[in-house]
Length: 92
Image 1: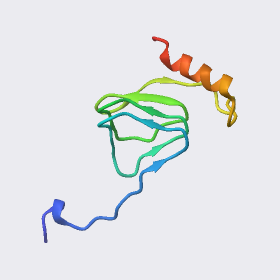
Image 2: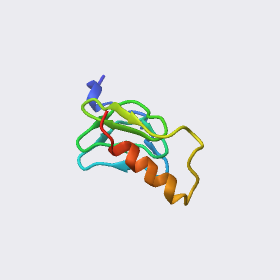
Image 3: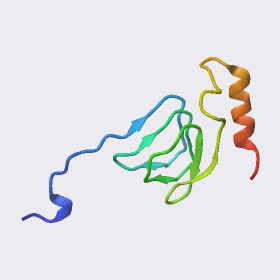
Image 4: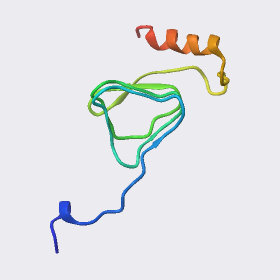
C-alpha cells in the first residue's frame, strides 16, 4: 500500500461566494466555504467555513469581527457597503 501522501484522494471543492476579498499569500484549505462578504487577511490559513461578512486572519484563521446582520445589505447599496467598510475598519 502506498504512503498516505501518495494515495489518490477525492478532491474537496473550495467554495468562494460573492464579494469575498482574499489577502495576498492566504491559503484556503480544501472543503472550506467562504460565505458572502468574507474578508481573509494576508497570509491567513483558513481551515473552517466562515459566516457572511466575517473578517478572518491568522494561522489558523480566526474571526476578527463580523459585519452587519444578514439581509441588511442589498446589491448596489453603496451606503450600506460604506457602513460595512467603516464597521470592519473600526478597532475592537
